[in-house]
Image 1 (cartoon, one colour):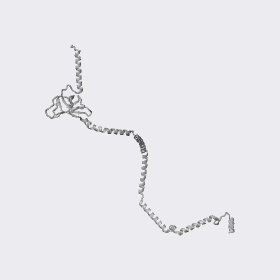
Image 2: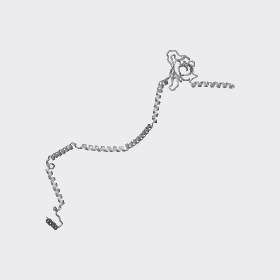
Image 3: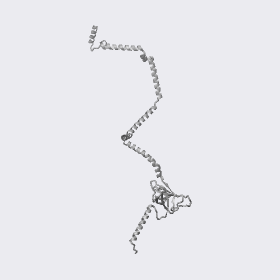
Image 4: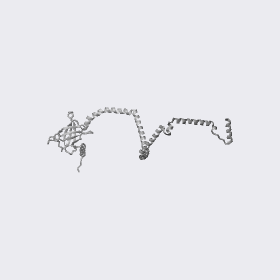
Length: 310
């Protein structure tokens, strides 16, 4: 039996730990250590959130990762050099571009825009691929929208201040209270209206239907009246009345003479005066005109007394 020393076991354990860390870190970075890769470089003016292990895609397919990002401390104008690790089966034609695209919510990735500008010519591993920066919609937001927002902010501040002054105004509070009371009154009115519509309106409609039927009956009765004959009779009556009136005014007949004869009026007036005098004398001396007694002798004595007086 082979005896393994403790030193060998410790060394093997360290190697295994390092290997696990190496494979684990590369796995977390998205690097497949068992897949052969080629390395290319791209130089960008700025990387805008690009990170190591960011994706390298071709037509939306992930074919590699960003291996490293290097800043040239000696020449600040040299830009940022990005090392790209891509599948060794990928052949990059000369004339292709490395495009750095910024995401809307942050982050960035690199996509290779393959163009066959020079047929049959390809970049070799280790070559620098021309690079461009596509800042995406965030640049438009930053360069176009943000200045407008900055211009609007003072106006918003004034608007907020005005709204605060309005909300703190006592008259507004009173108005809101009045509106609340008005709403409550409208609600009660609506309830009353609903009750009226459910109770009173059907009764009213029933009465209206009754009145309508009565009017219909009256209309049917009126339609049966011979208005022409009635009007003819009225015309004849008016003609007769006019004839009588003309005769009265002309003095013909008893009524005409009575109304127009002055002597008849005077005679009637004189007769009425005589009758009045007669009634006065009758009232003053009734014995001259009326003789009445329960017994005949007494009657005679009274007559004798009157003769003696005469």
